[in-house]
Structures are given as structure tokens and as C-alpha cells.
Length: 252
Image (cartoon, rainbow, N blue to C red):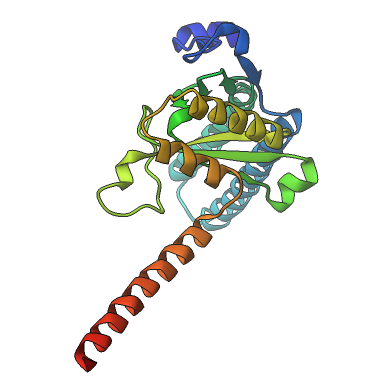
């Protein structure tokens, strides 16, 4: 079923390797508990749908008592159609959940990484280590219970853009974000990317040394809030020094 659906939707079962040597390629997949988390969300949606159908049926049966027999016939037909639609969508949406889990690919080579996910809407991103500016590991309460993490990778430039919602102005479209969703070894992946970022920097690859240094600093754990605080403090210090020079000049 999976192979037939992939052929019908023209989705390659596996992505090609990103730029880099084949020997260095490491493939990471979403953890099994991530599939269980997707199933839990799917089951919650199904229960909500059943409750909605039951409430709707009870409401329609209550208000249709005084209706004509023909109108009640069409109401009952609509009810049966709704129940049939629900029954038909159950295996289909279950299959979509399964494929959403199976078709998640995270590939890391010595030069770049590639993230691909999706079935109906395939999304693929390729990022070079020289352009990576920030790595962040996230773990919510439910993820912590299941031993799952999300690793966010942010770069400047490259393909497959996802604008950073926290960026404003003309540079916001130049920021790209990739997500390693549902992995159970995000710290390992993060350390691997850090190591290969350092190798790329030492080899002189990338746009500028500042980009690589910034990427290593952010990835090592400096938060955006701390950077903004330091920038603000630097601006205050500059303004204070300028004011001091002005007052000294006026006294003379």
C-alpha cells in the first residue's frame, strides 16, 4: 500500500543524499515514540469526531419530530452519509499518520544536511554547515515523558525557505529554519552538526568567517535573548562615551 501510494503521488521513497561524501552520510529517523505521539493525536481527533457526530444526531432527532416525513427522510440520509464518511476516513487518516512517520528523513553528510517530510505536501530542505547560525534543542512536557526532542536548525540563505517569524524587516526572508521533529537523540545530532560546522570553518568553507563563528557561538548554547542584551548594553556604552566626550569638550 505504501509503495503504491508513493508511486501514485510521485513521492520518492527515499531522498537523495545532500552535497558531501557518501561515506560520511548519516541517516536519522523519527523515534518510535514519535509515531505513538502521532497516533495519540489521531485518536484524540477521532474521539472528538465521534462525540460531534453523536451530539449532532441527537440534536437533529430532537428538532425533527415535527417535520414532514420527506424532510425527515433527507435528514436521516444526511446522517447516514456523515457516518459513512467517518467510517471511510478512519483507515485513510490512519495510513496518513503512519506514512507521515515513515517518510521523515534527516540526513547529515560532511558538508550539509537534508530534511524531508510529508506525503501530500513534500517539503525538503538542504542546508550547508557554513551557513548554519543557530541550533536549538526543544523538549516539551509530553515529549519529555516520551523521551523525544525537536532540534531546530536556523541558517541564512539556501533553498527551501521558511521565514523566521521572530525576524523583522528586509532580512526576515533570508532566514531559513529546519526541524528534526520527534528524534530521541537530538543532542547527538546537534554535536555531530557542531563538529562538522567546525570542520567546514577550519577548512575555509562558507560565506565568511563571521558566519561560521556566529553559528558556533549560537549552537554552543548562547540564546537570542543574551545576544540582544549584549547588543543593547554595547549601544548604551557607546552613547555614554559620546555624551562624556561632549560634556568634556564643553567644559574646556
